[in-house]
Length: 360
Image (tube, rainbow, N blue to C red; front, side, top):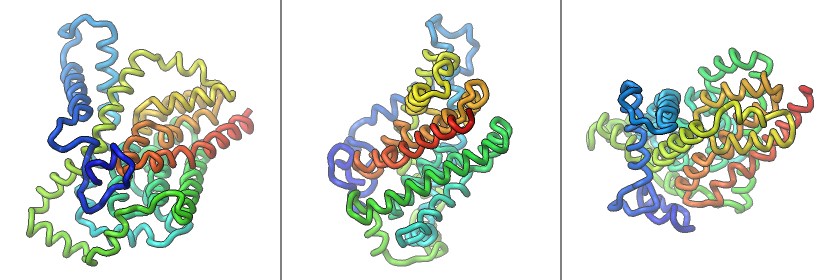
């Protein structure tokens, strides 16, 4: 991505590398390092006896909230970061062949199915989605991959069966996959009509010399060393996305500190107002799918609002500010980033209303 791509309008130039922020590389990335510092201090404070901490109102609550987020998110984020380095071992042409080169239902279904196979939370998948885009994968496929995946991983499905029951679990998974495919097809049509830009990295991938996975690994091992390359690529190419994930963790901890879960759930009944408030809450609460699930289960059981529970989980993918900012940084366009809520929100709200009505 070009250095100016996230501060100005032009689309990213694949020839200019992968800039990781709106700023020049010589400048300090205050968002990344500031959020990292807050996170590191919170982890250190969590390891200390509570009596050692200064008597500051809400401090312990904030530290606890931050530590809980770390426990929920670290594994998915680590796997996501490391996967970016591993994906560099795959020639971009191989990735395009796997997900499908042609437009239409087949390629979108392949992308959504790929999201199901990867057992990661939405934060780890964000990292991989950005890498797919830079490999030349169509934006419609990237969005289908991103929307389908957080619900349908094996680990989350097991937890969903325990908290929601088999009937609602299968219903939610089926509807979320439907939203992903429909959204992907809508964006596919927008790309074909020229309403949104084609992936600029795709042309570079199509022109690149065709090389096998085995030959690519040999080349990397010979030129730079395999393990060193994977580690360096993992850090350098994920930093742009990690800055927003880390900032989101700090913001989410602040929300959890000053807004109680009971106060939120009081307003989330099976009404249009409750559905709207659910949407707002899901937009600003920054946790993994696993972190959203207990709250969604409470909305389903205590508030008797399955539509709100579905909206809460789905909006965590489609309207979450971290997803929006990461897509903007990856594509270099605000318009491209806001395509995600544009093509998913109407579906989510409609399905939420229908679920509340039919379960009443």
